[in-house]
Length: 286
Image 1 (cartoon, rainbow, N blue to C red):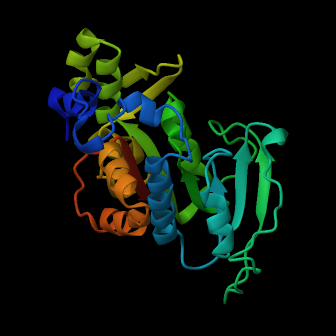
Image 2 (image 1 turned 45 degrees about the vertical axis):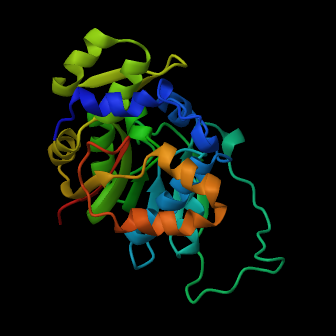
């Protein structure tokens, strides 16, 4: 499904439609929300809470071997380990390896689980070409945190993911959507490019920091997964609620986070008109 230019206009309208009435703060432009994952902001606390819940629902029930390509900023590896999976997390350098810390819950040691925790194994390598790994060795591959949008030749990355998956293995991935790409183009006054964006076969969009992101519609993402030999299970927006809505609600009631997450998880919409990031799950036949 291809978005209209109105989708981008709605995302960027916050720059000129700030509402000072009743103490409501002016909404930030799209790039300010999504150029950096500021864990201290209300929206990103909500975003990562939703991502954690989605990952928990996606993880295989039986312990297995998981490859995480999402980078050191991603917080899902520890959740997969706690669920009993052995996780290999790919890092750009040895300095980014996670350090063991003592985690307490309300000042006490964590409650013992029925299933023993798995192991986390950091490996330094290139997440584009997985040449360090043999074929068909992983039960799952996680490519969250927009990693495949940063790999501009996404087809090559998906082919590698399909190669290292065992038959019946699954992958969970998150990419930038065309809606986000159009909003970024509009904020940078790239109007000629914006007019062609909805019909582009490949949409590459510059970020304010000079990096490039590849943006997808749900249809395009499904086609790429199929071309890589994977079976699409589902594709949907990561979040339906807008950043401005979340910040307004949490600004008035900080305790509303759990209710917002539950609301998000119950949202039945699969329309990529509303999502700045798309989340997809696919399976390797066999």
